[in-house]
Image 1 (cartoon, rainbow, N blue to C red):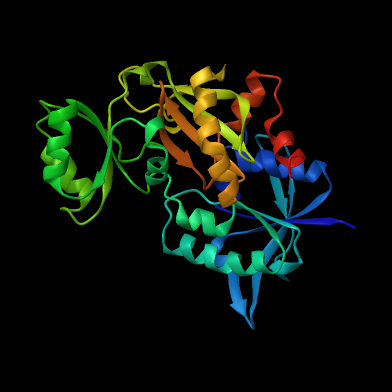
Image 2: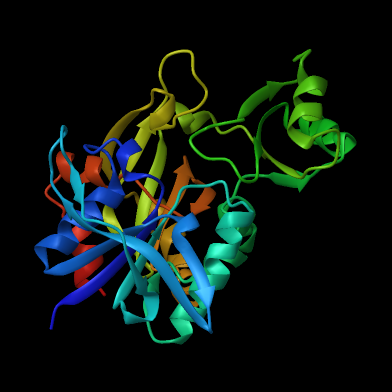
Length: 310
């Protein structure tokens, strides 16, 4: 019997095929005989206790010029699928929230969904690090400017970032003598109406912000160290960082061991940990990336491991 896979993601037309983990997952699904049903968040609807989607059967290719074709749209009942991958990028907004509510129902009807909708809903990629405080740098979450002024006075050199961002957007490094600190706080907190995160600056960022892929609670043996471009604080590949595959250190493995069982218990099957120096800084649960770079630079097959462990 043919296996049916659904993937909900941002427009496939806009991806960078050579770097995109979602495409890599779909290429491997095709190799394993899945029929791929592609849809976006706005394509879902609920009727009569059933969740439906207007989908396209997708064919995918490992080709920079032509990486997909779509058949004519059809409406399907999502409970008829065998597996659904959630691959939407942050921010986790109202539409993303409603997606998880709808897919909760589909999961209850017997469909495997990665990652578990409730877990995606429950876990903020920044705040979730607080579950593992012994692994993290000094951290503050809040909206009151006075708290951040005190935090800066204590640590002298800090990073500020929004709680729902991705790709380095809205991330600032601030030192004691920064005349723009007040303006940065006003902007990020929306004049103390929105919570943000501060972390002590970790100087080892110069050696890379490591992305460690966790599959079913276990790390793959390589991290992708994203090394900042000259003159740039942010190491994100989207901001010009260079990705270098590196074997996990003993400290990396300890962090993974500390976090892994909780991820598994929550149904977070595919997760990206961000580690700078000895510290866990973020836990990416919505749309982990960086697998294609690791596969290009090493012999390890990340995506095959993803499917083998299902």
